[in-house]
Length: 321
Ligand code: FES
Ligand code: CO
Image (cartoon, rainbow, N blue to C red; front, top):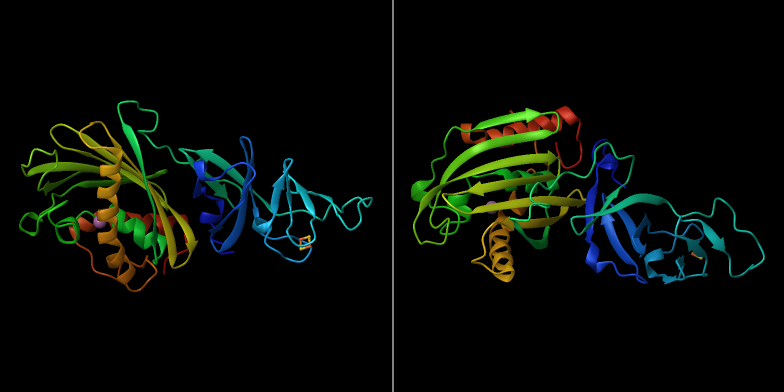
């Protein structure tokens, strides 16, 4: 397990809640820790994926009668992670030490979140989730063979739009960005009213300026709202730090208009993401440099500068250099 002083105590999405079915196990990986997920109704179990007897993966086992049985010698664990039966010695009371390593797990926004330590913060607020004027469309997960902080910084970066997303989110002839304001507060970063030109922001076929406001909620969770004259397009974006060089990106698009279907929104987002992935995977060094002297910055990079400073202030070590 990668023990980062910040991420160990943060909540991380590890799975889509709808994919964790009762009676089944699911194997996931978080901060290089292999986890088995299983559920009993609302109760979600997230354990180290390892049987204490001989180190077998519990995710290969069987869920039955609100217990999980190891596939190797059939030790039966209850939902609290305590072994309650050794099949080879049915009358022997299992030792208290015969326990799975149990982590905290919660379901929110249709995702399963896990914390490997003591949660230092609540799961971040997705502002549009309870706002019925916004339709939420799930996108991803997307795999990036890159560090999670590099991938978050790409999400926060607006000046790549005209180049990486030419004809979709920008145009090289209109690449100028205004001098926007960034504020770092106790609970993250806000970058307000970043104005850029887009070829067709509202489906009318006309280019126009749009305005983005970004929020960074936690080191690996962020969002934005984009507003043009009419419609709003928001995103909530969070990354599973699977390993130093492996990230899984989960996102919701939230829109307050109806002229695109869920499938169209998802396909659009898949296309935009596929444009970002090779760029982010190509970045060197792989780990995000927190020393501001290490790379060059422009005024328009002030969100990234604030992000790097904030990570340094928090003491994040994972995925950074
Ligand atoms: Fe799990 Fe033996 S390894 S019961
Ligand atoms: Co992009």
